[in-house]
Length: 192
Image (cartoon, rainbow, N blue to C red; front, side):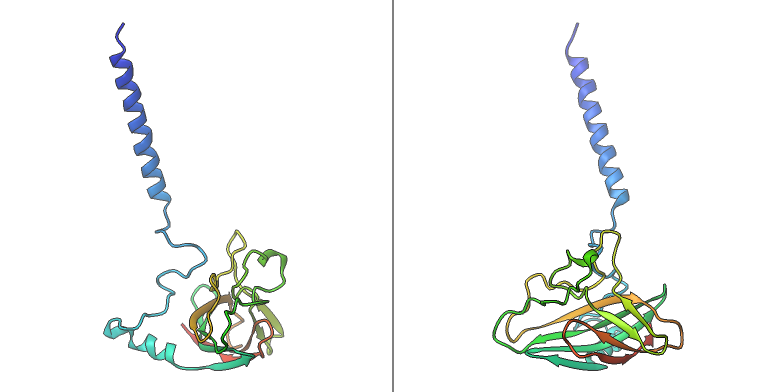
């Protein structure tokens, strides 16, 4: 009895299982983007982009609202009502102080959001006309659909942020954006 055919069968089986596993994983891939980040169709245009990006850059450069608390300035540059029934709010946060800022209290106090430390997870939209408060959207694992400040923000630094919420009913386009100890910022929603 020869050992060679048994080795050949075993090698063929290993190759078949490896190829099958690789194909199955490739078919299940989401393109490599983590679920807590916006998809490429939702990301803000980058500076130095193509000519078609100028409208997005203008929107990113405008200021709908700005609020300050201590050394932190929160600027809102867009608040878009998007297809699918959600609102995406974008802007920048600036640390004018000399110490590193780690977004204390910005993750909110909901138990479901406890793992979203140093993030925009505690943000809310308040629809005064509809008398409702909209909490940040999250994925099935409790991660907010918002920016996380993993390394904090150094003194004198700024960074872009985003946060997604359920959309208020059509016609209720003036909302207050609230987060932690920052004063409320009133913004008007535009169609995305």
